[in-house]
Amino acid sequence: MSRSERLLELIQTLRRYRRPVSGQRLAEETGVSLRTLYRDIATLQAQGADIEGEPGMGYILKPGFLLPPLMFSEDEIEALVLGSRWVANRTDSDLSRAAANVLAKIAAVLPDDLKPKLEGSNLLVPRAFSELEEVVDLSLIRKAIRNEHIVEIGYIDAAGVETERRIWPFALGFYDRVRVVAAWCEMRSDFRNFRTDRIQRMEPQGKRYPRRKAELLKSWRIAEGRDGSSDTANI
Image (cartoon, rainbow, N blue to C red; front, top):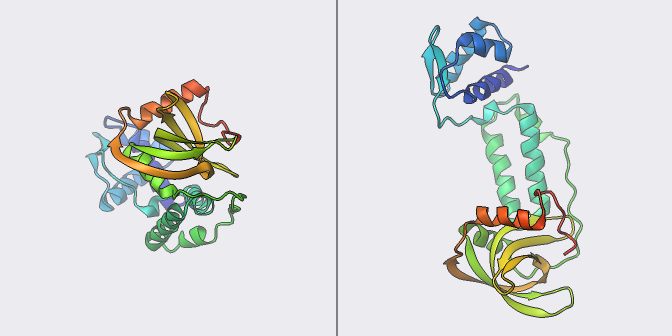
C-alpha cells in the first residue's frame, strides 16, 4: 500500500468515529505500527486535517475536512475517469464540458506520481447509440429539476398524438437509446415518464411545484415498483 493510500485509509477510519478513538485501535484497523500511526496523524494535521487529540487521550476528526485530490486511491482515480468519460459520451453538451473540466481540475493538483494513472486510464466508454433528435435542450430540463420548477411541454405520445402537459420534473434518466424525464403530470394526476425526443417544446413556469423532488422520486419508485435500477427505455 502506498503512503497516499495509507493516509486516505486513516482519514476514512477516523470519519467512522463520532468520539475520540485510541491510537492503538487506529493502528490495528489500518494495519500499521503505533509509531507509524502517530507519524501519519502528524502528517495529516500538517496538511490541514482538523484532527484533535494526543497519545493516551485518543483522536477525533472534526467535521468539515475535505480530502485533497492527492488523497485519492488508484481505484478512486479510475472511478473518476470512468464516470467522467461516461458523462462526456452519454449526456448533453453542457455536462460533457463539465466532466472534462472536472478531470482537468483534478489533473492540475494531483502529485506527479498519480498523474499518469489519471491520464493513462484504459477504462473506455463507447458513445451511446442513438438516432433520436431532441428539440429541447437537456440542460433546461436539468435546471428545472434542480430548481424544482413546474414546466409546460408539448408532447407527442407513441400514437403520434400531441398533448399539452404541465409537469413537475424530478429525475432525468440516461439510457443507451433514449433519455427519459420522470415527472408528476397534472393532467393525469399521476406519475408519467416522458421521452425527451418526443418533447416538442418546453416552457418553464417560473414557480416551484408544491412537493420536494426527493419526495416525488421516492413516491415514484414505490408506485412503479422500482429500486432505481429498472429500465424505462421502452416507454
